[in-house]
Length: 365
Image 1 (spheres, rainbow, N blue to C red):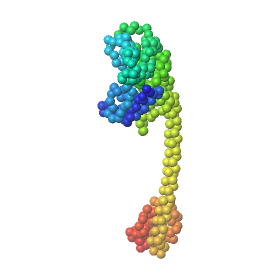
Image 2 (spheres, helix red, strand yellow):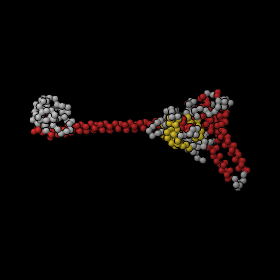
Image 3 (cartoon, rainbow, N blue to C red):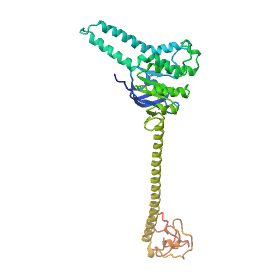
Image 4 (cartoon, one colour):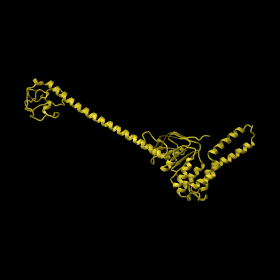
């Protein structure tokens, strides 16, 4: 039977008052090894627990293979348990497969081929045999010895209690037990926390040989680079978590290209904003000149040279705000001086078509 995919759809999980995961989706197909990356607190461990079935989402769904192996950051055994207990638990499924195959073989030998139950018995044997082959059951004991050696645990007596082991030794033993099982899907939370470079390289080789989907939460960039076929960045983003194809080096290249695109777009936007600003400044100046000319024409129409007799000498006073000089109004046929002796010129901001001398008391107004 083909290996099943591990699928999460639109997962939502809130812890306390904080929404840790909001609409996260993930598909891990057989042979794919997905790394979960992001700052502490973005939900990597929470997502692994949901994928493993150790926790339930507030919304969304998870579809998983029947046999999922989950490496916790803490070992799931009591301190009084021994190394032998952990290994026996890891080998339990392989031994059960072998025992069941022996039983079914005996049943088939005793059942005539033409009998009613023979076909069903044969199908059961075939299914169990396929499962044993997927788990590499016949190699389980040898695999356990190889894993203990590769993780630096071969010298430890199997009767030693877990409570007497260091934290690093317990972590490596837990990882060895999980790899001995060869589950259909593998979920690892910080698997290299207690590994030296040699042990990490050994685990990398083991994971690359796993046939089912593997999902790993890790801050170890070298490990992610050596193992992963895809990466999911759980750091907050506008469109939610982003999936990148390839290992960590490919992820970095993708991030650099993404930033280059953003910088190019930003520069183009700034150029457009500056062009709009210059256009707005030019338009404002043009409007101001147009309004000034229109105001002068209205004053000439309202007063006219025949409507006012007051006269003044050029430069007799400073022109009011809005006029650059007395000569700026040369389009008016006469400069005007009201009866008070003060030169009066129209305010270019006025909109009423009235004489600028109105209210000054002179005959011209």
